[in-house]
Every structure is written in structure tokens, then in C-alpha cells.
Length: 187
Image 1 (cartoon, rainbow, N blue to C red):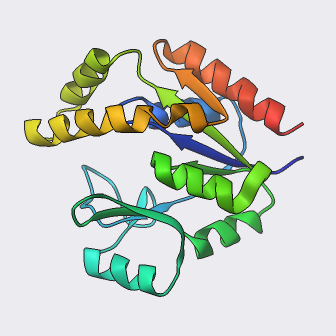
Image 2: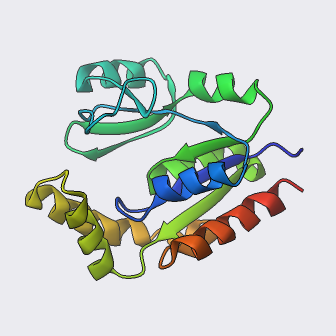
Image 3: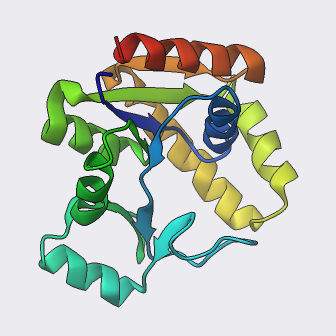
């Protein structure tokens, strides 16, 4: 198998996590790269499972120690990043490594790993639908939803730089398209 770094990026609420879950149900084999973040856990999220949860101070220390392949301060004191040690650990396993990261981080992974990285941008069908999805989660304040919607337009402007762009207007179709992209990358 031609091991790849499969990098997903999308505005919050576009269905990345759902697509990833569906790929697993279809038997797609990958090791999931756990990102580090300085944001607080949501709902049932656990440290070392969904994210490595760090304080902003711990995150800054790791930045100073050059521990990240990529990182971004998405909002003030809210960092996301990929630890070098995490990528190295997963590459030693010899399977595809899956990343769920922001657009700038995705492009940095591509610069760092070149053709070994396959970038997939998940696009919402519309900004209105994205707003509906964010509101229906019921996990964030109206102020945070508005920040996410503003950021979504910025993030979508990067989609032409990705290897693939998949519109998630129908979950089954989006999952099938992503499945085919990964299968082709592994040939």
C-alpha cells in the first residue's frame, strides 16, 4: 500500500467528523492524527482521544520548543496544531494517517510532506446551510457561531489550493467521493 497523509479541512459544521466516521464504517484503514488545541473540551471530548488539550501557556511553550509540524492561533488564545511526535508515531505504524485540521495547517502539512499528503477540502452546500448546521448543534453561543461563519468565508477562499474539494450537500455522495479519492491515492 502507498501510505499517505490524508488531510481534511473545512469550516466548522461542514461534516468532516461525520464523513470520517462513515469512512471507518466502510472499512477505510487509517490512523487518526490527534491535534493539540488550547480550547476547552466540548461535551464528552477526552484528552488524548479527540484532541490533546493544552493550556494556551503550554501550547506556547511547545511552539517555542519547535514541537509542531504546523499550528495556528485560530482565535485569540485558541491554538490548534499537529505535534511532530504524533505524526512520527503514526508513520511508524505503516498505515494512512488522517488529519482534521484548519486550512493553513493543511497547506503547511503539504509543504512539509509534499506528495505524500493528499489535501481534501469539505465545502458546505451554502453559507445558509452551514449556519443552520451550527445552530442545530446547540453547543455554541450565537457570538461564537457568528465568528465561525465569518471564518468560514476566509477558509473557503483556500479551497482552490487543495488537491480535492468535496461539497457535502448529500452525506452519502460526499462519503463516496472521499472514499474514491483515498482509494486512488493509495494505488
